[in-house]
Image 1 (cartoon, rainbow, N blue to C red):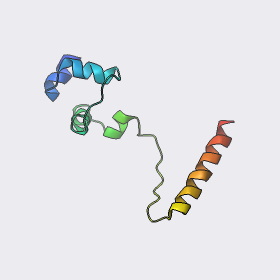
Image 2: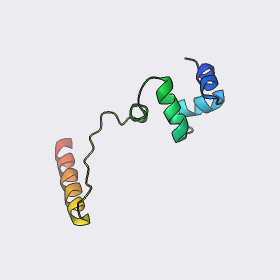
Image 3: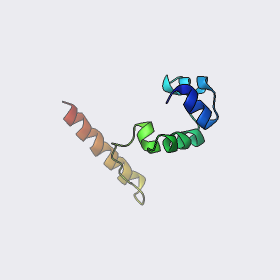
Image 4: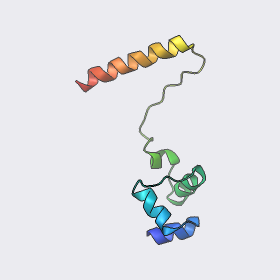
Length: 81
């Protein structure tokens, strides 16, 4: 789709779409959701988060959270070598 077509479908200006594409502006959560629906994808994909792993730390103490974060940082540093 052209910028004009996307802008018309989302009721935005063509320049807003251009700014999003050029990383000169960021869409609101509402616009992000509309973009995901328009392109038949997820907001995670648009944000570049679809291939990321998430570790849930709910229920841990701050010290336990910090220990896990430290281990992750150490492993990431070792794998970068």
